[in-house]
Image (cartoon, rainbow, N blue to C red; front, top):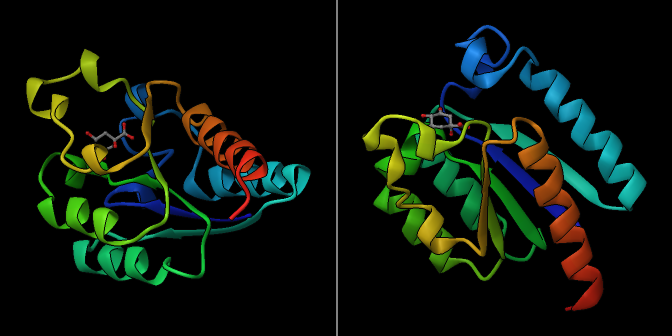
Length: 147
Ligand code: DQA
């Protein structure tokens, strides 16, 4: 299966950004580990990061017909973006929302996910393993239900 990984705002700063919350790995290291896992699982992976909501929308739209699954960490747009929710609903590609941190252990403003409502599931709080588990799920699910 073809899997699109979308990293939202500020995730380009992984490794230097609040490492106590988000860990020491850089985005390049996370993407490299995802590519390694994808190769093991036989998945075709594309990873992208943007700080711009509209760019993320364009990539979600472009997933229609080009990806079999989306893994998205919308960053702070998780809590604000009706547009990302609408885009995920508009495109018939299953999406998993992931977060490095456990939003339930954080400020109350982070406990609402507007985008998660439009996803098959949400995996959070497991650091970079949140992404790895999402990739394993999408590959397994695609194997069970070929389309
Ligand atoms: C995050 C959680 C968000 O609340 C925050 O704005 C982020 C990262 C996470 O992966 O834990 O940028 O999505």
